Length: 372
Image 1 (cartoon, rainbow, N blue to C red):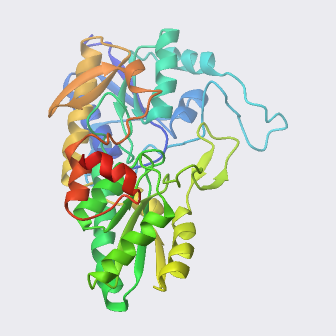
Image 2 (cartoon, rainbow, N blue to C red; image 1 turned 90 degrees about the horizontal axis):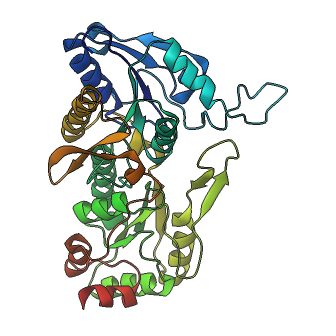
């Protein structure tokens, strides 16, 4: 393998801090073995259109601390439903997976490393089923990928969200306001839950516990009776009312995940201001959580994932994803990691700790069951 091994890399889906750290780790580890490395530009788009760059040691030098990805990424390019150009006369998606596979072979690749979340790795698993030697690396700020205790990007997003909650405490307290902080996370509440705990949020709303507006109002009023004339509410973008639906900002037809969540905080804020008489302000963090430098933990985690990916290639364990479980780097089959999102388990001690510390999930009935 030492003479002939040539591997490809791609970063798919949304960007996040730590992607460059993985690229650096894979490239440096592979080069030390005498392998050749190329990086496909803009995720699977580069694989379909054969656009790549050669990666040498100098190309990945100094990128450990940089956010984003030097290869670029794309959260719409799906080789199995591909539109060659939005300006083409024929805009109907085509299955170009065989074309992508032929480009893989044409470039003489031994294996492909796909770095991404559920969507990117679902496509990776389909390529594996076609016979492509491929390994995965888990990436998402949402921390909702199964098969691993944590994904890189999450800690950096959590740091941004917690810092925002910290800073909003002072203005909320000074003006006696309700401040609502809306985090990302899609259908899982990991960012909101842990930023709420770390930042001392008074009410934390997550998708796993549908909220009741009346219970949120009561929680705010109880605080006022105790002399607390302000409240910090941390809301996951996927939070929804009991018996209701998540708030959808828009839908994109040309995306593998067409639903864009957002705006639930404004719905809650309007009601709270009317019912409590307290001025309510909303801060939606959005893409701030995906930008900037990765935290030291994410740099460490991403580096470990990258080195593990090279080990999987050397051991010819294709169809596997690097994982981190019980504080050890290991691997799981990609098929076990995709298709079922990892959500907050209400039986865990961290969920109970929110209530024991005096905060609320905006649903008194569920809270009573958790503490029972």
